[in-house]
Image (tube, rainbow, N blue to C red; front, side, top):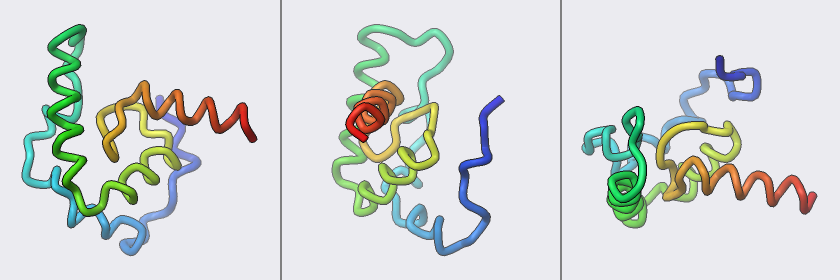
Length: 95
């Protein structure tokens, strides 16, 4: 079960940036891997998701949200689960 204690409360202003995300009109399957997906298939899907993120006007807010809430699944703000995990680990070591 995910630890939701660190999530902000349901304040619309904190989430409004999501209305402008490029991903809103894209099938979520592009951003979230199916069970058992590995190798080339996963890399291709993640690359496609990152290409969408790269043109998104709210990429910085999306990435900040994903890091702050420790999103455990999907491509958020142009980062995969593994990339976010590595960045958070580096930040913990540095700070």
